[in-house]
Image (cartoon, chains in turn green, brown):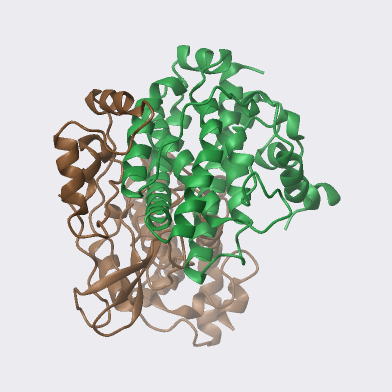
Length: 259
Length: 313
């Protein structure tokens, strides 16, 4: 598979997996407005994923459409960043616990603050379809970022409990952001071809954005970590399998079904 | 019934009876084509004239039924089956073609948005182009990438075209340039307002949406601004201070954090939308995502009514 397609899968799978994660809040949001808001963010992300996966499938030319890519690949074939697959409940409590909204919101902040400069840069991609998708996604990700930043500030600058949870989430999630900025051969090839952009070049804008929000939220940016996760190469945490099992079970139980 | 006779090929029950707006297009084109192709079919022309005057097509007399059936044949032949009209070669089409494009725009203006039926898809700026080729092609652009209404809109357009005889019409989707709320027409904005949705303010094309926050504690923003001015990157201990300084110095940080930590309180803060119910400007944001992704939920502080705000996009 070409680096170009791999690169598109990274973006598309990350949106899809995070969209699926956020969708888990549907019906379980802390308040009705947030239940709806998070579902809408999830929907936007899945919309991005549909466009990106459709494009990747078309470039591949093997007849795979968005549904085949979403429902018929196993975890090892997924190319999303590990950050996106972590459970909403945080890392300490595991998948069986109810979601932790602070963890969800801080993850959104960290990822959406990456998506915004990413889409800005990809608006100039040599891949015209990717540039079009990026121009569209930029508008949506900007609203997601706004939502996540607003809630991070409410939690961080809220009660002692909400502050502690937001800080704990930030400390747990921070190391997982390294993967976004650690360029590998696929990133480099895609960037050389003019289709993609090097994650490392986005870090200054990301850091400025995130730290400005943390500042306002009275939260402390964690120390640097040397952890570099490998989801974008197909080596995932144990959490992705469970997510995919839930997401794919219906399509796999009824292959070829339409509705 | 007239519509019953029209149904078999293309114009389904209900459409012919919905009156001038829906009924006008097909027969008008039929008349135009009939004039191009000798001999002119007086029945079709007569029917088109009758539609033009806005009279009801639902009245069923034997004579009208006959005329409707005869015009229906022409309708089908023209837009979808050029071979059936050997005289209507491409060279003679231009003038009626323009009319036909106008007719298609007219029928699209009656296709409602499935989420906000008060406005049509043309009001929203979703219809980008009508191409008159071998088959009619309507170019749409989605609002939000994940908007579930996109498929419904595609289908509605296809249905409207089919109902007017454009059986082989094509609907295509384009992403670029991306849809913006700036394309919502003035009429569309008025309709939104009348429907109870505050219309969007201007979107800044191509720019990232700047985040705007209000400092919760009085004086906090000033304090942060002061710190920033003094050269401290306030919230970035543990070695991030340098990185932030670098980021701020680097051009191209289009996001508005670049001005320093205290800077995002609002030079360009957008005014909250006015209440569509009572007109008061005294409104507050309840949630950045309302009943759909494209709307935010606000509340009027004066009349206490909650309302949707169509977000600039």
